[in-house]
Amino acid sequence: MQVHIFSSDKLISHHRKLRKNDHAVDWMVVSIQEFSFKIPLLARSNREIVDGFLRWKAAQKLGMTEVPVILWDEWSEVRLMVNRSEVPVILCDGLMRCRRRTA
Image (cartoon, rainbow, N blue to C red; front, side, top):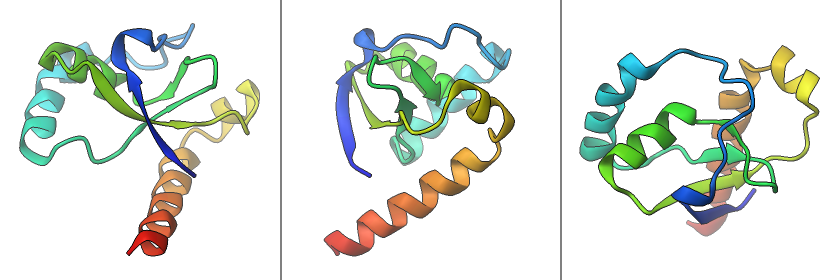
């Protein structure tokens, strides 16, 4: 699992926005300002955001030109929808393994 840096304006929002979370963008802006961008976005190689749409919107509001992204082509659209709750767990586990290797 490798973290890439992508231009935020080159990312594409998912064709179906799964959550209506515009009310939380300001909260996420404050979180990113206070703690930085701790959890990368997940995107497919075609640059479509799979997870992290709220973080992406907050980054845009902050004027960030680049955001951290992990490419995630392994899961089909159906599996992603069914197992959406697993994504953060798998992501955190993978990031912890990456950090252990570089420490």
